[in-house]
Image 1 (spheres, rainbow, N blue to C red):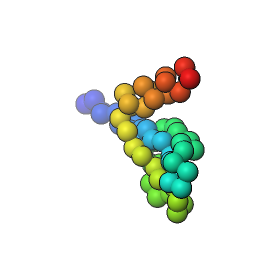
Image 2 (cartoon, one colour; image 1 turned 45 degrees about the vertical axis):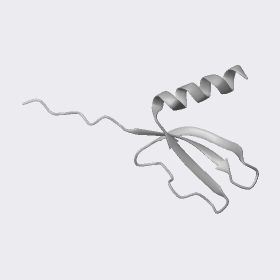
Image 3 (tube, helix red, strand yellow; image 1 turned 90 degrees about the horizontal axis):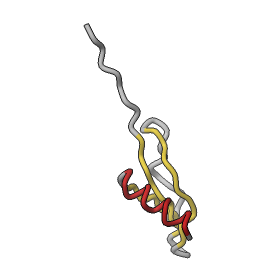
Amino acid sequence: MSQKQEKTKYYYFIDVDLRTRQIIGWGSESRDEVEIYMTKGFHRIFMSKGQYNKLIKALEEY
């Protein structure tokens, strides 16, 4: 019998300071490590892997 291997699911995100409207961080974390709730005044925006890669590419070119 073959066993099905579980793939680790990653969440891709950017963190925004709502007061200044600036990106304060970005990254990816596995499903069991991702922080969903942020400190008051900050917001985490989740995106697809493709959107995240496109953002990182644009940030590196800037």
